[in-house]
Length: 323
Image 1: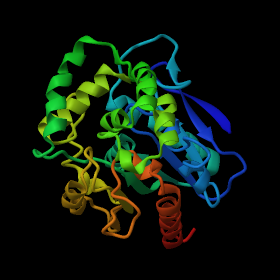
Image 2: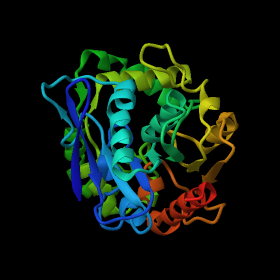
Image 3: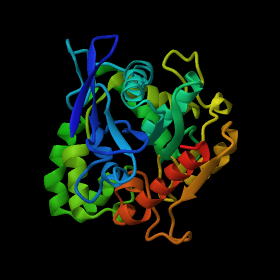
């Protein structure tokens, strides 16, 4: 694994993790909120990056505030626009310069939101397609628990960061003792019935990471208002969806409490893309389980059921583009 530091214009050094020796079109893998590069490379079985490396050139993002991605000083705050304009703008530029080819953007949760926002803000950028897992582009009034959280979390304005890493470590002993406790803590992160015990422990030991007050408060604003907008309120990403004109594939789960499949289905027509599809990973549609949020990538059978679909989709996009 090649580890590439990328300097931002505000003093951070963020990192790209490149699977060396691969060929094909570059794929940028963008993690979600409160997560890190292990979103796409958790263990030897659950690694979309390794699966894509058979045909493509995977580059895993690790944005500010996690892993090696630190600042020269230690500011405790960042928001969605810092990820978008400072971290990812530099990363996309570097990958395109290194490979000489446009990138496919694969994002989980907020990583997908960032892909949509990137194409809204930089419509002529070298992004060839979007592949989005559990990506909320708006929020519904019926997401009552999420809306309640959005109100309660405003106390976070008085705190520097959300110490999810310590929280995850403290949960591990409890999880090992009580499967029901595991299900309770996982419910909003994933469908716990669709994740095996080893993967659950890897998630809390390796994947869960700290997040800043800035992004947490911004997310709570989205949930309460129902729309995704910039921290200063000047740009509404939900209302600018017609700007997105690249091919887009959405993966949804009927048990996803963060990005419900029915909300995605309602908002999908607003994208400006000529090619836009949604795959709902449900038993009704022939899949092994009713998928939730995190298990869209890390579910028991995701490597067999989901990863091949991503490969086929990216190949289809490349073939239609003549490369």
